[in-house]
Image (cartoon, rainbow, N blue to C red):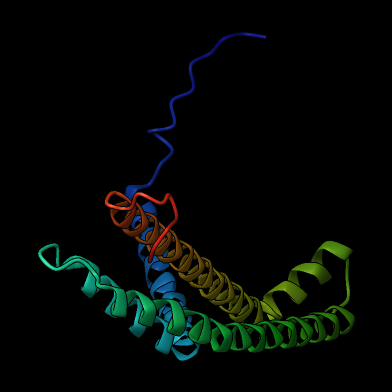
Length: 184
C-alpha cells in the first residue's frame, strides 16, 4: 500500500459548500423558531420567574434578603410543578408525531416498488417533514427538561444559602451565649 498524499482542495467546490451551509443555516433557523416557540409556550412562567431571580441576584449592592429567598423557595417548586406537567404534554406530542411519521413512512414504503434501498429512500423522503417535526419536538422536550434541571439546581442553591444564613445567625447568636444552646 503506497503512502500517496491526497489533495482534497482540488475536489472541493467552495460555492457548493457555501450553498450547503446556507441551506443548513436557513433550515436550522426554522427549526430553532419552532423549538423556541414550543419552549416558550411550555416554560413562559418559569422563564419569567428565573429572569426575576437573575435580576435580584444581579444587584450586587443589595444581596437577596430573607423574604426574597422565602419567595424563591416557595414559588420555584410551584412553577416547576406546572412546567413538569407541560413537559409531559410535549412528550405526548412527540409520541404522536413519531406515530404519524411511521405511518407515512410505511405507506410510502408499501406504495413503492423496486429494491429495498429504493423503497426505503422513497419512504424516508415522503416522511421527511415529519422527521423534521419530530426533531423539533425532541429538541423542545430536551430544552424544557434542561430548564427544569436548572430550576432544580437554583432551588437547591437557594436552600444552601438559607441553611448557611441560619448557621451564621446561630453562630452570631451563640457568641454571646454562655449556656451553650442555640438561640434563634
